[in-house]
Length: 228
Image (cartoon, rainbow, N blue to C red):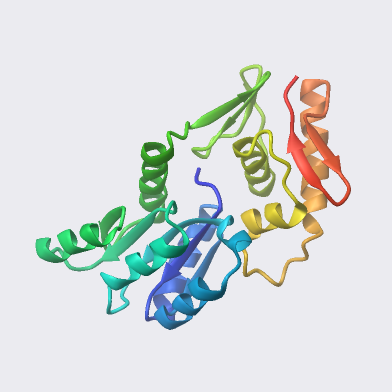
């Protein structure tokens, strides 16, 4: 299903915590911001942190029309959705004019948000729902990968690592990039070295089913997926 991390901006921490809990059940990392903290982060965050952001969700912030313009200055390609409790047509039209990609009426289930973000990405970057790597098929809609047509059941973290490697086929990814993808750029309770353990288990399972290891690793440079 989706790829990376979701940022949620709302004046109430109770709201951001609630969405974070819902997304966590779907295997998606999130970080919540107050409007002020989010604007500070946008102004100061290095470009590498934006790589780990999948989409930005704007809740109640008081200045709906201003924030999309601020966001677009730093991350023009990231889907921006407004979670709106008001059905007023005039406000909805203003939000689209300000640059948001979608306006979603609350309450909304995280699965619907994920589906909307994936649809936006497919429209904007022509991104497919799967990647073929030799006999390995990696899906981005929540399904387990397949090897020669047979599903390979993977734990959530291993599946998301494989998705990220497949999405970036031909590009070497560092351990930090993969960690940010799986756990989120603001996670501090999980040691980054856990990624090595996840990848070791993933490679063992792929090697067992494919007869070779499709993931190449180089010390200090990171990981890349190759198909034979």
